[in-house]
Each structure stands twice: as C-alpha cells, then as structure tokens.
Length: 347
Ligand code: TTP
Ligand code: MG
Image 1 (tube, helix red, strand yellow):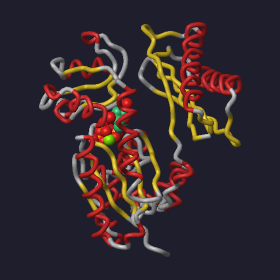
Image 2: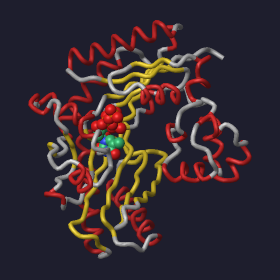
Image 3: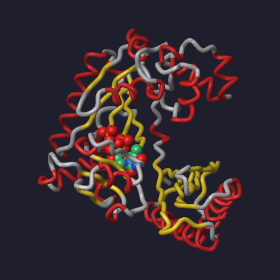
C-alpha cells in the first residue's frame, strides 16, 4: 500500500485566542468565552478558555456557573461567532493552499493529505511553514500533528498543544500510543472509559490486551473500532468532497421545564434561525440532529441523515421536531437546554 502522510492542524484555544488578539490588554489573564456567568447564576456553558483560565480547571462545555466559581476574576466574554467565522475562513484559505487534498472538520481544525511529499522530514518543514504563515497573517498560534493516517495525526496534534508540531512516523505508532490514556482515542468518551477503567484498563497499552471478540461483546460495533484505533489503524482518506460544515443553535431555558409549549416554541425559533443561515449560504442539508440537556446535565442527541440531501424547510422542521419528541419521550427529566444542528454541504 502506498505510504500516506496526513497532517492535522488545530488552532490553539481558538475563540479565546482571537479575543486576546483583539484585546491585547487580556494577554496573561484568564479569559473565558461562553455564556454570561451572571455573577455565578448563569445557566449556559463555557465555549473555551485560554490556558491561564485552564490552570483553574476551566474547560469547554463546563457550566459557566462552575467556571465562575473556579475563577470569578476571569474575563468572561460572549461568543462573537461572526468574528470567529471570518477568521476561520481566512485560515482555511491558507491551509487549502498547502495541498489539493484537504478536509475542514470545524472552524479551527482541518486535515491535509500531503503524501505527495513522500518524506516525513519534508512534511515537518511544510508544517512549520504553514504555522508560520498563519501566524504572520492572523497573529494566531496553531498546533500540527503528522502521521500515517487521520487518527494518528489528530492524536499527535492533541499531544503537541499548544503551538507545537509532533510527527509520528509509521514505525513509531505503537510506541507513541502505548503510554497514552485510553481517552486520547477519539470515540472513547467518559462512559466507555469508565467501563474500561473498571476492568483495570487505563492506558492504550493495556487496552491492546483485550481481544476483539471481548471488545465487541462489551461495546458492540464500536468495540471493533476501538480495537483498530488502539493499534493505530484509522481512516487515512482525506475527502474534500465531504467538507461537511455544520450549523447549530441551542438555547438554555431560564428555568428547567417540561412544558411542551415552551420547549417547542423555542425549538421552532431555533429551527427558523438555523434555516435562515442555511438559506443565506445556499447550502444543502445532509443531516440534522436534535439535542436535549436535562436537569442533571445529562445530554442526549438523536440524528437523521438525508440521502439525497434536502433543501426544504417544512421537511427539516418536521424531522427535527420528531427527533426532539423522541428524546423527550425517552427521558422524563426536566429540560435545561434544547438545540439543533444540521450538517450542510455546498449546493
Ligand atoms: P477546540 O479545538 O476543541 O478547542 P480550543 O481551540 O479552544 O483549544 P485547544 O487549544 O485545546 O485546541 O475547539 C475549537 C473551538 O470550538 C473553541 O475555541 C470553542 C469552540 N468549542 C465550543 O464552543 N464548545 C466546545 O465544547 C468545544 C470543545 C469547542
Ligand atoms: Mg483548537
């Protein structure tokens, strides 16, 4: 098989770094971007925090009230999505110039297939240039991982944060993975990790001792993926034709509720807002998901894919509402937040 060289790039503390750039007086101080903390009573979550704020234990998706408790003196800023999207577009424009095979994953993350370089040394040089160009034009730092497939490149970049480059050559994959915590593997979330830890499995090296059949028995089909990932096998194809961006909105209720009128009127508004954005950009919709966060912060989502892609508001609305209804019927708890996200592709 032809040797692949895949590069993963991820901007450092993206939203917060942009805010620091726009407000140099924030440098060196803890900065938290997210919902309004309202003096500790705010009900939303943290989008991201700079590294100073992370020292206090603050991280993405944490309740903003908890972040406020941990560091009330931090600078709390609202999410200025329009600005971040503009910056992201310019950064992606730079990244795409480095290979014809690129894949944008989110506002601050992309893959490049740079197999054409045929050398890891050259790949590293390209990474340095790419980082330098982004820094020169946007005054923002990023981190790059390089490996034989997307999985390894992504884990490598997460290990090199912030402002780093890490190259994992094919012969180094096992040595690289072995000492890492199992949760470094994409797809092993807190729940899966908890089950594995109860079996005494904490490091990837230990995970490799489990047979494929055993993993399948415990986790079903996901078990098989975990088995391959633990050995460093991951998708290598970088597929620009699938640059699927997503557009989403969510809303946290002032008070937890179970009132269907309140829940669905807010949800309809969310659908209309998301639809507005889709229409403006002329996207087609390839999937939709509804998300529901309950009183105890448990968060559930349900999705549906569209093949062929759709561009019809009534249909989108009907499907999204059905997904939310399913979530509500399955979980009887009070609702804290509802949201919707659509996967979109250029028309
Ligand atoms: P990440 O790349 O996951 O995080 P980051 O760039 O802030 O920090 P790191 O240096 O670890 O890469 O996400 C990119 C942006 O996406 C982030 O700046 C804010 C947003 N985001 C959320 O709004 N909510 C979330 O839960 C996460 C994980 C990210
Ligand atoms: Mg990032």
